[in-house]
Length: 125
Image 1 (cartoon, rainbow, N blue to C red):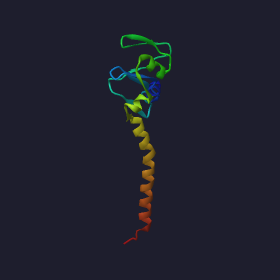
Image 2: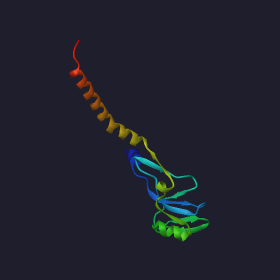
Image 3: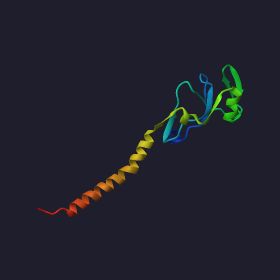
């Protein structure tokens, strides 16, 4: 049961840093419905307030404010979530199964109605 909770729960919020482009911003990996992927040149961190992060050979203390942290680094702050601005969404198997369970009954009922209507309106030979 614990495995399902971990599998189907939301990913933690963090900060993504791109040392090549000197950009950073908020990052969220997704939840049970979708995951968000960003390219490998983005470093994902999940610090707690007060944690130290080593970037460009310097140590910075995470204060919980991504915009302030990016400015302290001298990086460009990307507003919004990095995964949506610079990444792409990948649907999970759970989403596909959930969609199938929502759509399948409707398709089945519609098919049965069509067959029933055909059966009662057709004339026997």
